[in-house]
Length: 437
Ligand code: NMX
Ligand code: MLT
Image (cartoon, rainbow, N blue to C red; front, top):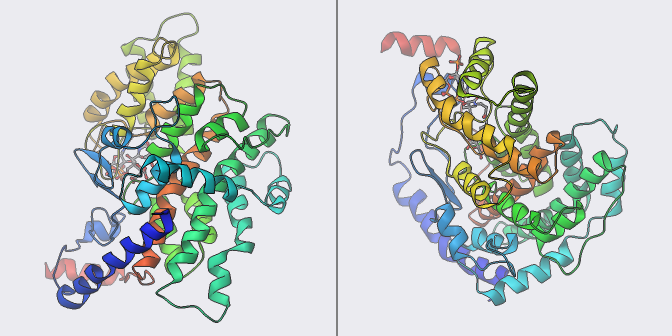
């Protein structure tokens, strides 16, 4: 069955489960809210639903019930590669089913049709000052696509109905995930390669095409596949996914919603941390390792200097995870099995920070999780392959995150989730409840 038909069947099968939960068990209590959660970023409050991925604090992410190694193992691989195509992963995230090779081939073919980016998007990005951050360019590029949103068109057609609305979100979502790598490659070439644009390769899957569009080598094709899949989703509460869900809950179309999600991803406590990691590591090399090899003592000193300056150690800590992020581990394993990369001085330094930082953070005593997250390991791989413009790294994250966010809002509409509108309270109310105990 084709992707849309499979998805339609899955959504229709799922709807009665959601309806029953609300109608028959709507008042069952699944959590309570404390004052520190109210002031402290709604941490750990169970109030969002998604079946696309789930994050266990000890184990890390599962996509559709599968760990990262299980996901890589289960999905059909790109020709001649150990990694699945992004297209097969898209099918898997949307439907929860591992596609057959024939189903993947269909998605790859459809992706190629959808990936055509209208010229006005490039014009809008080109009109920005060239020294704009590439995340601004990406967010503007996605927002510019809104003009032709099929969901917005359906809403304005006078024929809008809740049961079929998801089909139009699906159309926009699919267009968006196919186009965002092309927009990202355009931004890369515009900003760093003197606007020398490279054409789409119509014979390539998403990962290979992205590598070719930014002038990368063959091995980078797997880096792109791995990177986009690993960064795709991290359950619903993270800033980019939650923002996308929130904005779409007002029936803003996927372009409005994901442009907003990207703006959240651009924050240093979220996706921008990967550029900060590289910045921190390169500055460390320049300051301490001009004539000497890095040592654990030097790394320890640099970490304390950062902490004593009141800054966070980028790439470490997490709001939910309490162990090393399996996305970190997966990228580290990629480094260790790639000849050249495993002996690269920057990778060795990143590995030394991994040995050192958790101990320092534990001694510092603030971070609830002293272990590395995805961002601590991602930049060094890009750096090794010559993609050294580290302010671009969050754009790569944003290309991957589109897969999860778009799968999520397609299901949001399929299940008819309501506009999100939590209740706020005032400080005197909190003080009153505090006194009452
Ligand atoms: N370095 C120094 N201090 C830290 C760190 C860190 N890496 N992580 C947490 N803390 C501090 C935090 O600032 C807070 O201090 P204070 O009480 O003075 O406000 C305290 O420890 C408690 O924070 P937590 O509850 O452990 O962390 P929280 O859930 O609030 O925030 C992060 C989670 C990820 C924002 C935080 O760990 C952080 O700032 N890490 C560094 C930035 C980073 O790597 N972000 C990327 C996250 C993954 N991603 O891609 O989005
Ligand atoms: C993410 O991938 O979104 C980050 O790890 C942040 C989070 O989960 O809160």
